[in-house]
Image (cartoon, rainbow over all chains, first blue to last red; front, side):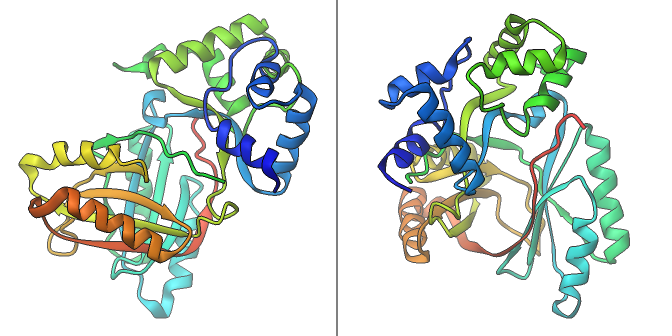
Length: 147
Length: 163
């Protein structure tokens, strides 16, 4: 990653214009040409520096539902529990964390009742209690990760 | 406001077509429009509307934390008195190094924390230093706090919003 890549990652985390030739405008603010920016973005995506380039949708505003849930997976069957949880396509992210509640996962679906159904299914399949922690309030400013 | 009720079939197809990303071509909105069989102005108008309504938070690059060296990802959680929790949440969310702050329900006795603040750093020391600054800000309104580090990503896919 060179200085130009860093400028792109730092400068393009939002504000990509909606117009006929948006890369022209975005490239100009970074001191690049349209072609240079497109080629660089392709490479940053291919290399995994960027996970995505495009609109960030807010699930709740689209009628969807998202929750964060946690459970305590006994260490001797941690991997098996992870497999059962991950098998649900509605589970978008799942992290092992260092706490007695050692598995934390995000469930997202088009409708709230699907989220509830998935949490119940995970409880039955794993025979573990699932702690549902939907957000009650969000304070979001938006992180700019410095490359 | 219930934005969902104002989404129609074209919106849903537009979401499906772009939630994995925009095409990296000179006229990306035209390319999406071609794929959907609508006019380019239609795609652009709908995206502008969704931004105005808050259904699109922003358009741009989503960096991979790990690839940028932000491998210490700490979920700091705080047991904040209920009557000041919203106020404190807003102040914590305003800190430049906090990516998200949320109020979530407690589950006593297993889980007593109601305020979550995600803190990213290149090292655990960096995260600890930032958590210390949150502790100073919150002061006595937090009865206890801890930081949950991610040990391992067990699964990570994009949210499928309009399957």
